[in-house]
Length: 323
Image (tube, rainbow, N blue to C red; front, side):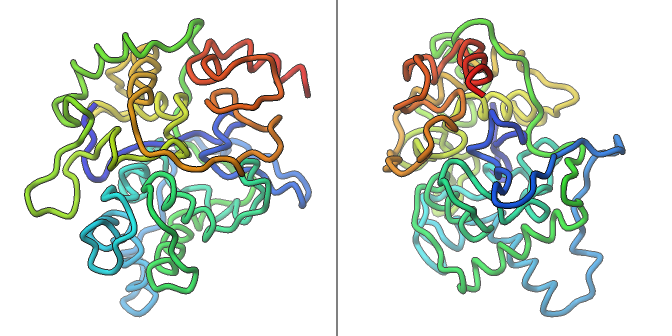
C-alpha cells in the first residue's frame, strides 16, 4: 500500500462515516444528501481560472499548506512547529481534489453543521483544527491566522460549485462490501508485508529523506502517525481508502486489493501502537457512535472488540432497530 506525500485516506457520507465527514445540521430543516443527477465525475474548481491577484494568492497559499503542511507547520516548520510531520493531503488526496480520495467536494455546501462526535454545530475552522489535533496529532491554529484563513478559503473554493443537498459522483470514499466475519489483523499483516511495507516500512515508520521536512511515504503507526482519535482509526474508513487508492497507482476503477484484504490490512494497521488523544468529550450522545467506533461506553450490548473489528452487521442491525 504505497502512499506518497499527496496521498492518504477518508470516508463516504453515510452514518457509518459520520465521525470523519460532516453531519447534518440538526438545528435546521433536514437536508437530504442525494446523488447528483449527472453521472459525470466531480471536478474541483480550478485556481488557474482566477485572474492574478490577492484572492488567487490566498487560495494558492491554502493549497500549498494542505499539500505541504509539514513544511510550514511540522516539527521543522517555517511558520510554526505544531504537528507530527504529516501533510493534510496524506489524508485528502491531491490536496483534497481527487475523486473518491477523501476530497473536499462537500465542505462548502454542508458547513456549518451539527456533528455528533462533538455534539455541537461546527464550522470549517473547528473541522480543520480537529484534523490538526487528530490526524496530525498536533495543536490548533487560531481562526484569524494567515494559515487558517488560507486553508479555509481554499477548502471552500474547491467545492464551491456543489449545491446544498447534492452529493456529486466521486465524493468521499467509495463504499465497499461488509465482511461477514471480524476483520483480521493477522491476515492483514500478510497483506501489509506483501503490498505496503516497501513504502511504509517494516515498523510503519514511513520514509523521509535526510534533511527533509516532509515524508516521501507517511508513517502508518508510531509516534509520528495519526492518533487514536483520527477518522482513519476507524477500520471502515481505512478499508475504503485502501481499496480505492492503494497500492500506489491504483484507482477506484481498477483496484488491486480485494474487499477482504482492505478490511484486514485496515485491522492490522489500526492494531499497531500510535499516539493517544483524550476522547472523553467525544460522542456526548453515545447512541450516535458509529458501528466501528472502538471505544465504549455504548448504547448497545456489543463490546469494544466487536465494535473495532466486527462482525459489524449485528451492530448495524441493532442500531437500526433502536431507531
